Length: 277
Image: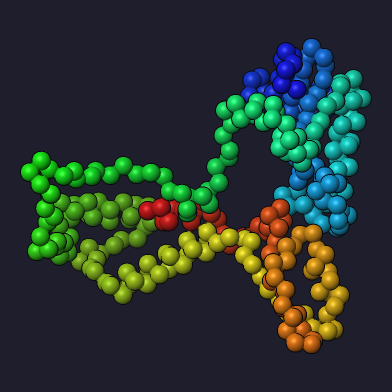
């Protein structure tokens, strides 16, 4: 694969090749051999190995199709490309990962590529960008002294340079919102400030909530069918199971990474703005 001298067109040189007479674009195309190369993501193409159970009933997230429908579409696409006279070479994602783990030559070749993973906005909660900050170095005459506590004070009210800025804000607010703020009534209100801060923190906390939080439920003797259905559900990962006496079972579970539901009440990108302020 990596010793070939053949030139392959792909998204990063001349763009994905369009198969004439179809609506298909291919991952790679070699004009010298008239061969199409495809990388088949297991999630998006209904892989039989990665999704062996409930293929006719489980809807794959992000597609609104079952695994069987995605796999059938993949085979229809392959046949359409072959019928156009192209050679067809494909590899499934799981097969690629297995080969990458076992083939040192392939691993070396992949590691030599300048690949950048897509940005995961949620990482910003845990790995904040480095910020430059001046550091007071120790002076030649000894340790630098901190300010005395007596000078740790803030101005009471609005300082003069800020007054004009606040008035400009009032005019700008009126132009955009049609609401006239009264400067004489703009005063410090600790209660409203605490309430606003509570609402803000609650809001961005909800917006940034994970969709795969652990859940738990109880099953009783008359719910054996529901109990076994949860245990065999390919979209759920059972984390813990506790026998609660002779007639009840407590089960803790969560959605598998491929089947985390999309919530209409969260937006990770919006939650990052107050979180990084």
